[in-house]
Image 1: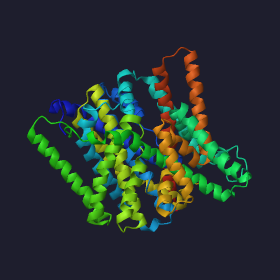
Image 2: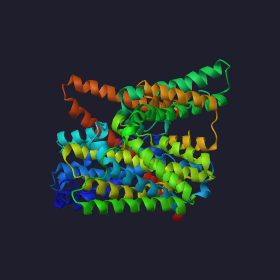
Image 3: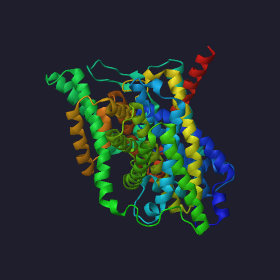
Image 4: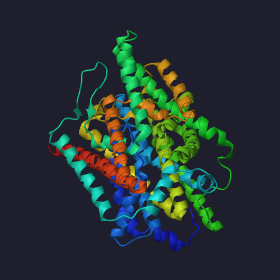
Length: 549
């Protein structure tokens, strides 16, 4: 965990001011990430947003180092992927009515185990996957270019906090004051949740995804809802209930097939060389290397003990989970490096199925397995992208890794706390398709654990997902459209349309593409964060009100 620079250099990049700003941002970003992942079934990368915010806030304190800003944003964003790993798996327990079998302590152990494994793996493979490979890491590269090119000033702050405030007020008016409904333009279409989701947050997701991705998402929604449910039912091929089971199974298959496609197309052809070369975070002195190796070994041992004893899975399952976590985090690093996509819950499902094949564990423990792996893979994708950013602008690997550790460990506590607050405020019945917290990925995990409604549709989707991904088509987005309620896809499509209009209007005004993109990211990210933060605050207020009332 050493750096190529001096001890003073990495400590300057990980400054007290940066740590304080990063930790405050980590609490906010992690809390909003939990809410976003549960409410929307998606979790956009926060890296570019946090890069801009970190640079803006550090300059307010007179700090102008890009490397310090990069390390600060790493602390800020690290908890978001921990939040994603939990939100994409654990709520499935509640969907199966097993809430009494899980406590906040066990959720914390799941998050902590995955965090430790993700941090160790990234320390081991950084040199091979960043310095010695030609992986692009599009998210990390974009963050580096943002830090290098952005001229953050008062206008950026006004856009960021202005959009955040407006989205927050909208959420208060809708959810706290009841001045507007959650769904607009509803129509009674049998089997289809037709309408427009009254959510600035979902509009922002569509805006940030934009272009072909949102178009594919919406085509999947049209195909699943109006092709299979409405069209198939009208043709007498099946009834509405059967059609809904086919659609959910097909959507799950497509999303999982996309994850398998990552392995088939992007990972297996390069498997022989994945671990060649030296790993570790670099080291000038053998003593430092030995110390680093000792710390990493202790972290692995701690994770294994948490899985074995804390989660009650026994030594054999613990060894398998730890070993396969390393394999899947390498897969995650490869996937993010090539595509910018991190199907963390798919990797969790792969290990879940492997454990279920040989071990006698409970359904709840299978969710724990998926959660540990999803957290590890989500964090690995984030860490490796950040290492790429640092390699471009010259940040210290040690400072970045320590920053990730601070943010990820803080994020484990915040993410579990927010999950507990949401459950306390709205109950476990609020999670699942068509409910307040759609929890798409967790619903997939729950279905895989409890039984797939239509196995033929799932198999067809699995094969189709692999084929589409290998053909270079966005199978994950198509499957997401098939699986999600139509009203969510319709709102995301409107966000994509707003992005298209915005880009065309900016081009007609002769504005630079980079400047246009930066402004759009800042405003959309502010909207995304604003509704999420207010949503968490309202939930917390409901919990406190229930306790005191």
